Image: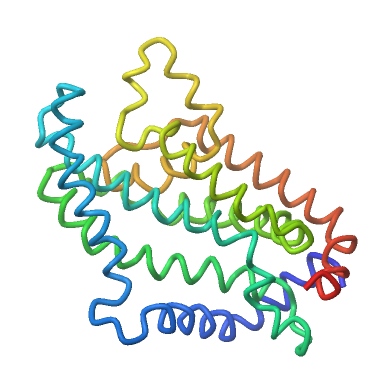
Length: 258
């Protein structure tokens, strides 16, 4: 089986990864009264503490900073969780992989769908906050589906490439977690790229910045820079080509590595 056939079969079995993604969310928050809402509640507590502090340190009026920070932190949570989950995609589905013949795309789409469902819960907070902060506008919001598609494509091909390596080498998961922790401070989440002054262009070398920007910009009332569209389009293409070339070499060995 090649990559294109794997993607096609996965798309045809959309009902399966939709169900598995929902099941993951349900099982993760089984017997929890608030369910996935705990994720953004934790973030709101973080923002309520850090917001006034960083607003003071950065000398930004609270009314201008709060909407930006809430949107950035909740959006980052989704991007970070996707990449934290990627190395364990096959490991978490080892029972299916060793016993059932399913296209690997099902497991990648399951992981992405699970995180998008949780992200949907975050929008319950993001939408009213940005609306009442007068940040939300229709023109930029209409770009959200396109922006989301670019992020999903990058996540999909990154998952194909890293999940197999993460199955073979179990150190990949903690390494990825460390990278995500560092990226939180290196990415304009609690600070703005304009604070770098003439060196703001350094943020363009951070791929996490472009994914974050794609998802948060529609809610903050502006269109991402053209370079973000270019970078994510190029990385999606490169990811597809690398996945296409390495698909047989990696995927045929996954069952033996589990």
